[in-house]
Image 1: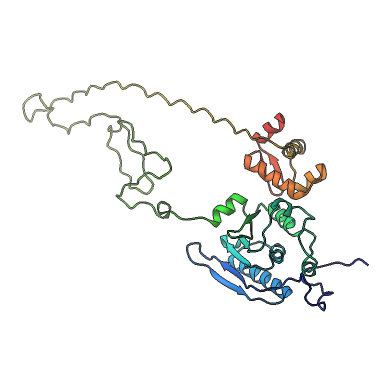
Image 2 (image 1 turned 60 degrees about the vertical axis):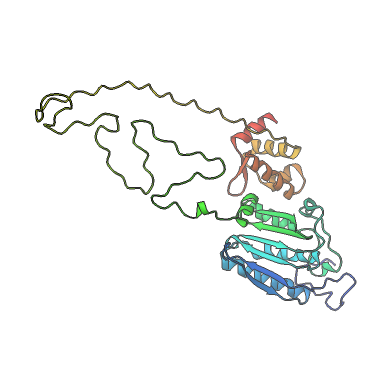
Length: 353
């Protein structure tokens, strides 16, 4: 007779004892909370215990700490990733909470994931019978989390750990932004502006020196600097008139006033405007069949999401999510509230495909 299975609630095997492939918890779980990326993290330890209680306590602790930081990643998403520690046989599970609770990194030192793309496909799983006493074991966890994060404008990323094992990072930000946020550093140039009266040196990375003002022009006003009114006529390059009654040099006796002689103005050549730089050609990126199908569908329908593409062409929604993310990085599509639309560049690609 069919029956529903719900994680942490299955009771039928509790009396069976430990089988040959029964997972056993031997290592504590460590949860690192970065209140400030410039300081050492707070570490919360979850001690070894029975599998079900261990998974429940890790999930509850991570969810609570994420909420305390102001994060919005839901309990169900966190639990799906925590359950995957069972595939690593609970070897050194570590959870890192960053970015105000909006980026969470789950790492272990288990056997790792050889085919990472398959791990994001619904129905692929390495769960043994012993593991299925505690998790669904139908290959739904990582695909569900990826679909949820992408639909909310975030990301899921799977990488190898340094000395073996897996690192799964979920974030409410896109993948590139999540990596930059997790590894952000503040440089001395960004920390504070130069003090008053000190020179501002050019930044590294090819930045040019500020241009000097043209002859006869007032220098550009700098933010925060005191403004002084320019003397009349100086900005145009003219010589100021002498005080009333003052003699002109080289004319008449001392004390005798003469009308001011005009200062001969030299014609300056007109400055030619700089020719506009030619626009850089758009990068040409080869498109696979799924990318062309997605572009054609978006051109015909106006907008679409991974589930729409699955209904139209088959394959999994997670595969279409990755295709849409690739097109977004190319600048061919942009995501609105829920679905993707073509950019001008994407419309040109769709027309030429």
